[in-house]
Image 1 (cartoon, rainbow, N blue to C red):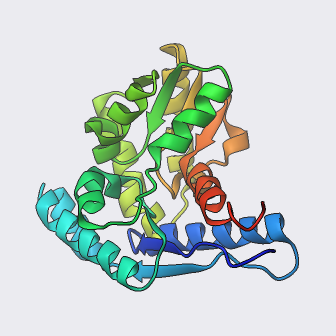
Image 2: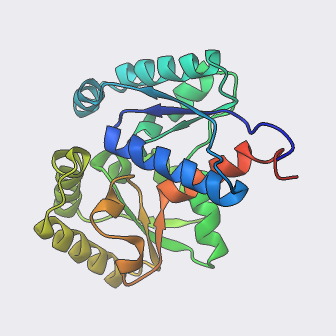
Amino acid sequence: MTGQSKLIGMVGGMSWESSAIYYRLLNQGAGARLGGHHNARSLLYTLDFDEINRMAALGRWDVVAERVGEAARCLEKGGADFVMLTAVSAHRVADEVKAAISVPLLHVADPTAQSIKARGLSRVGLLGTRYTMEQDFLSGRLRDHGLEVLTPNAEQRERLHRIIIDELTLGKVEEASRAALLETTADLEARGAQGFILGCTELPLLVGTGEYPLPAFDVTQLHVEAALDMALADVLT
């Protein structure tokens, strides 16, 4: 190392299971890249997911934006060189958060799109919470990169949302839910999907990326790799 890495600011707690995955992957990745006992230098601000979850369910994204933006400002004041949101659904308020801080916000969609295009794919199925699948904050940004995005039908979207919120964010992994997810991906494949976006941090807890019949893109892993690229850019040169 020729100097310190950039300080990564993480807005977490949406859920804490998600934040734990991000924290583990960031530090494992830094150790793999730098060797020895190196970690990723980071700050974590943990929100109360119960409030965030209730406000999102009520459509009170203004409150979500206020809470997440406040967390991001605290991270910036704490010295973070850039900020990342450790939940895909939280990117619903990414524009408001970006406007609330002066350091960069690393958006999860950009490294995801780059990875998909690098594989030569153009049509992908999107899996995640109801907010992620039905609203435009992720799929719209992916389309800006030239991708076609397919989503499950309404019944499948509702079932997958329930699995994520009522089970995975609480650390529960049910075999019936695993079967339901694979059934959903089979339908997306039949509709022409060339791969799948695992658009929720907790989804790999249910089905690992190597268990799908088509290429699966873990947005968390890709987000983490992009964060490490930013954080270590001046260290590894």
